[in-house]
Image (cartoon, rainbow, N blue to C red):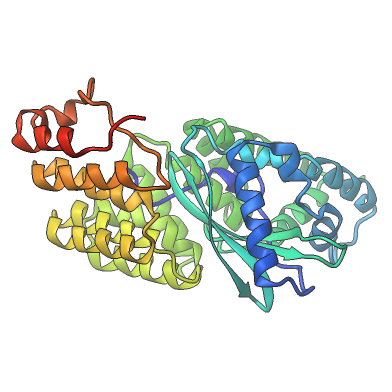
Length: 379
């Protein structure tokens, strides 16, 4: 199981901090619940309607001057009208999605912090909201994985793209634009080798751009050769060592190197930057379990995460997997009953645990018989 990254939205689109109109915490939380529900339902049209596209596009082009500016700006505004489709494209399975963590203030503006989960790992969005047009709207998003507002990332891309749209554009300029488009498409499609080949042939100056390096990291996550993937992450760290994005980028390589101290430091900094998320207690537990095989400390971390958020299913799931790994049948019984009795999770195990090889030994134990007697009766 990967414990760190969620890169999907990076190659698509994500947003950040222009909003300065006051939005109350209650308004922000209500709007966040609406966004979470829209993403869960994959209602991309409804999600797109939550964005103030004009404000976001204006921020991306702030200070940019170019003869082709009007056409490029118009094209971007048109594309952004369907942003929900692009964002939700990163969610592949039914378990993927966005979980509202809390409302807070970031850089003086009200934001909604979401934890983004996919099969590849996790990320955080801080969605900035503004109600100056009569209702809350998303004006931009700060993304933990990129370490900056999306509008900042977009402006650099725009400047690069515009450099190849004048009458004096060179063949090299046009090739650079084509390569950026091909690289993004390859990353979105999960074609790691193709994406890395495209990135490696780019001019050295372009290759060092942060958004290109992040796309290389995202592609590396798909490689079977983990040493090569780690090397690409190391290149990012060497170039952007003080960047907040490094904490998410480096967790998996540090796990493979059995470097608990630095992996924990990454999680601690990430926790501070997102305003504290009990879920990261699960990640801390995973680090102790995977790096040090320390089940005792891992369980303490999972228990603490559940104390901080009793509805955190990931913590209960981690406790169950830890118990299965250690053939701790009393603990398996306890956690399975906790999961089935939780009022919000609505999770029921098959009575015979059919097809679940992980439970084979448990089924031979007295705890299995006790679980059958004590579990909630089907309605």
